[in-house]
Amino acid sequence: MRVIARRERPHPGAQLRITDRDGWRITVFATNQSGRIADLEVQHRLRARAEDRIRNLKDTGLRNLPLQGFAQNQIWLELVALASDLLAWTQRLALSATAAVTWEPKRLRLRVLNIAGRVIRSGRREWLRLPRGWPWNDIVLAGHDRLRTLTA
Image (cartoon, rainbow, N blue to C red; front, side, top):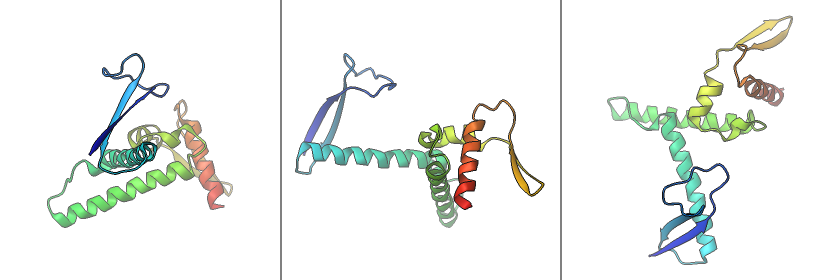
């Protein structure tokens, strides 16, 4: 087993921790694999992406098992996985040209999914009517237009 420590500058906008000294952040990980340190670090960083997905699953409903029986909770977990996949594909397909592509599920739910909109059909055309003054109307409209061009 070996422990690898790396000193790096936090990315712009990152919140500094109490352990960050003079603007530098120390990143440490332990491994029992052999190989070059750079390759091991890449493998460790790829693992961090998996942990981000796990955190997103917990925000989507994986944090608790609300039902009594095992089979019922198994269905709940399938629904959580389906919801997470739908959010990920919506971000990649519909919201790829907007800032919402990097948002976490909580922020996406607050800003995009909780908006009260109506689809109105008039004169063989469809209109998406959104409330005036909603700060993220342009993101919702861009996603709607993108989905319409993908299905056309």
